[in-house]
Length: 108
Image 1 (cartoon, rainbow, N blue to C red):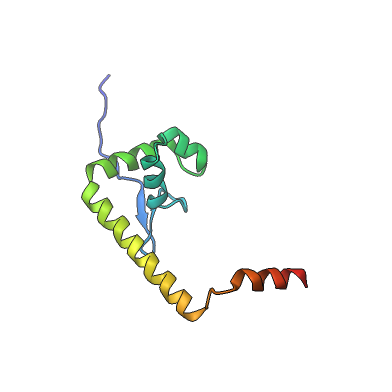
Image 2 (tube, helix red, strand yellow):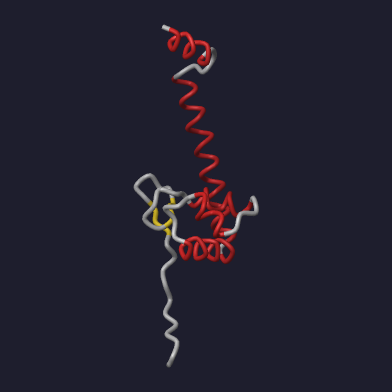
């Protein structure tokens, strides 16, 4: 019997929001990378995010290890964009005193 070795696509997809997700799930590449960097194994990541498939997580981790510069650039861009969005939101909606306002609303 001959072992068939065919290339398989990395289970990553980019949505209209430019966010890279794993497989057909809503779990982002950022999430998997962060968990892996914190020392989680592929099995632990799947346990934490049960919509993921173990083979997909291994494939994504392998991709990240082989494409570190591109993944770092993507993560840096996501972080930068997150800071921009937060700044925009805070300029439109003043966060000062929000906790007190929410608690007051709750007690009514």
